[in-house]
Length: 334
Picture 1 (tube, rainbow, N blue to C red):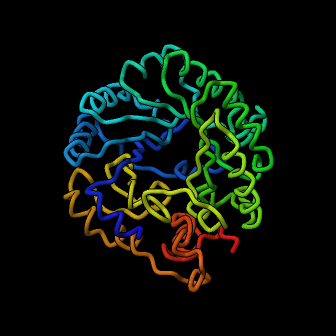
Picture 2 (picture 1 turned 45 degrees about the vertical axis):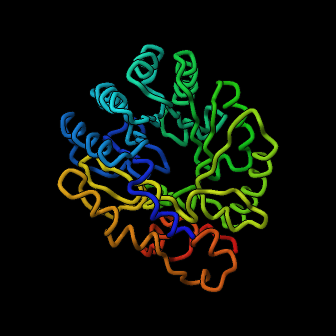
């Protein structure tokens, strides 16, 4: 079913775009902090925008690194927005004051997400290795709200917050956040190096999702979102998504600072380069992307009654821990 649905799309719905790996933080779980790549010029980035417009990609989301480090971010966003692209961004909030928020609004940002991983300032600052970052992040949320930009909050679930995630929801409410993303721990980059200290056991992930899904179902004043395909193996889980399993390579792709395309930011397999290769050929014929769209059950996934719902769980985690896109998600509790 997932593969049939994927074929309906002539391009991804979203490009998650890392404009730069540069960052003013050094977070314990970051997938990209130890990465390096040549950055493109403003004009080259505009050429990429032209490609995305031609391919009718509706959404781009700037991540990083820290997007606000690029001096031309507003110019890029204005160029993309003027051509009809829906532009969003994820930021750590450090460089985002009221004046910046007003500029982001004028440039055409549809939404801006701020990363906050604990409702306790000291815990967030320690996780992000940046004293004062919690105060800056919450102030950024307030500035964005004041400027009239839809705000989201991104929280990576880990050992520091999984038993107290309700406090993150309360924090989101206090700062007029429209949507909170409770992200799964990806095990990539520094997340892999610090996995033993930060990641949960499979049973703890199950307990977290059972509780968090119940809270989501009981909440009507805040949109709570997850991005973890392994949830689909829970009994009674009935949420419908456009594809089953991981959405990367099916609904979304990732752009590195040099224009290289990867399935997602957490899978360091280069599919091709958007400036030098034919995009449609990559999209339809890439062995990597087609391998993700047509995964084969391996290990304990073979014969599992939930496989058709979760398709092995998070492909990025499987690849990070085993080097194989089709191996079972290490978070799986079944």
